[in-house]
Image (tube, rainbow, N blue to C red; front, side, top):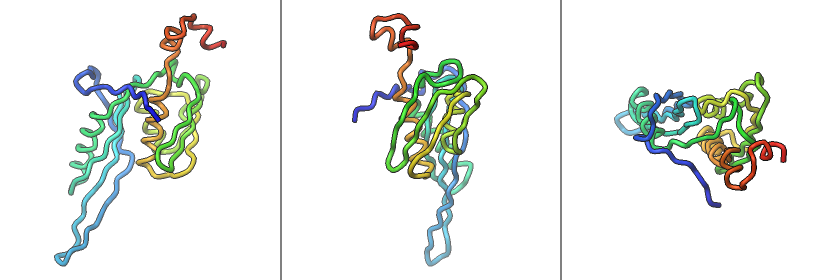
Length: 173
């Protein structure tokens, strides 16, 4: 399966990115000297205008793991087509056992999605969408499946140029 991810390099980003911590996991390693705790944070970053990325940070301190996750997310930014606060068309994607279904919604609907999907969509700047998470509820895989679905989206303007037809014909068929 070939992916057409629109990866954006961090030095190309001119706007300020906002981050959201989706999940924090505490891991205990038991040794003869006692327990050693480390933290793993899943972080989603986005500019609220079609740019989104996800990252994982691991460290002994919570704040340090969040910062590492933020840095990792900056390396994995993807451009998403957002039109009038919604997505251009319906999209299904899967990552591992996590499957997601995203559908465009009319203005005023809001983001109807679960926790991990909601963080990705809000960071991308999507305000009206109906989503369903199918299969696994593992936050790592749900986030990756959501970003895969968003990266598979095709912008109507690009489709009209590629096909050589007018923009209104793309919407009306």
